[in-house]
Amino acid sequence: MVILISFCVHLYSLEYMCFDPFFLRFMSYLALFTFFMLILLSSGNFFQLFIGWEGVGLVSYLLVNFWFTRLQANKSALKALLVYRVGDFALYLAILLIFYVFKTLDFNVIFSSVEIFTYLN
Image (spheres, rainbow, N blue to C red):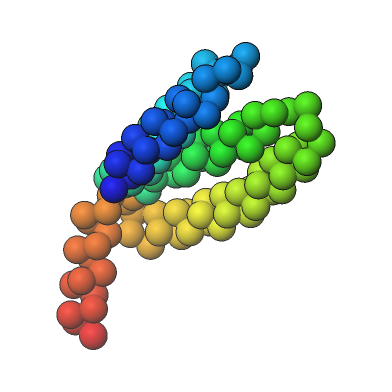
């Protein structure tokens, strides 16, 4: 689903941004966003998930602030960055707590441990 939607966005952006002098920069940001989204969704452990989350947050900031000379774009990008920082902190604490409890960050081990724990209670 992500690849399909990303393809549609890339296709639309090719026509919409074709005369922009910074077309290549925009398309690079868009491709990088897709890359980090795929890392986020295909991760096998919480560390990879965190890397994908951070990448999506960074590239979101870059895309929102693409026209950095506009004041509203700067304000919106800073607001997005602030919201991501709050989410980053919460996700970081959750990952630390998961590692403290399960001694691993691997999804398969954690989910199987939770199933065993649920079955025993």
